[in-house]
Length: 315
Ligand SMILES: NC(=O)c1ccc[n+]([C@@H]2O[C@H](COP(=O)([O-])OP(=O)(O)OC[C@H]3O[C@@H](n4cnc5c(N)ncnc54)[C@H](OP(=O)(O)O)[C@@H]3O)[C@@H](O)[C@H]2O)c1
Image 1: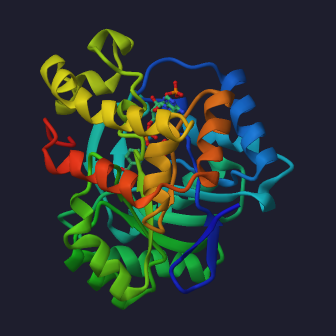
Image 2: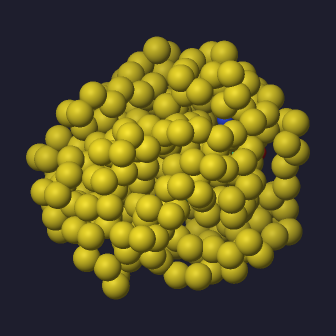
């Protein structure tokens, strides 16, 4: 199993983790029994870096994980997030990062997760109204109180990352990174490398698109959030399909699956990835991407496809 050090404070995780968001929100319907089956199997095979957030569901994804954590809490590296406030009814209530909010969110997440510590606690999005020093100060207090082991940021800019890290060591930055979302390479990755902060790639399968399984909007269930995403208009899907086709071609050549190729490319960058799935067979498929090494020619072909341009913004 490939492992990655996130930061220099001692957090070491499997390079392939499990994104749990889609089990409760955004990507269509799911069943709790099936989700718990995926989480059980993940624990069995060593895919023990689990990613959630209070806003997935909202709240229900953490409750789902609490059920899967029973009897194996120590075995799992549990990451959750705060800062994108939602009501019980799913309504959006803005970005919040003031000290009282951070502490109250942590206590609420601990309760829902049925645990007394979070391994990695991320600020999900920056609160433009609160200085990052206040947010990180509150996180540092949570570390001192033993409620949080390591802290992280998500989708933060270099200046924020640098200011945050000066208050308390940041172990990980989680941001979208995949063959069709490489903008972090310009400034973000050099910043975190310089500061010795780890990187966790979210949506490493391009929200499923790079697997080649999404060829039309009709491949998505009504209500799926991707139907509102600029990369999933009918036109963008048609244009971007040539990207997925290159991934499929490479996969055929090396007798792997397209999802495995997309993940092997991410792993070639020495970062951790948290692909999401609600299916045991896909969990196993994604986990097996660690056994694949892409040759230079394949990497060049995959990367040059992005240079030809991606249609649609990430959000
Ligand atoms: N920090 C943030 O702001 C942020 C934002 C987005 C996501 N995240 C985190 O990152 C995790 C992963 O991102 P994501 O779920 O957006 O995108 P992703 O991992 O790129 O793709 C997930 C999608 O791909 C499908 N899929 C998974 N494995 C597959 C395979 N082997 N073959 C074909 N299709 C496959 C899944 O469908 P099935 O479920 O049907 O298998 C799902 O629709 C999330 O779960 C969440 O924890 C964080």
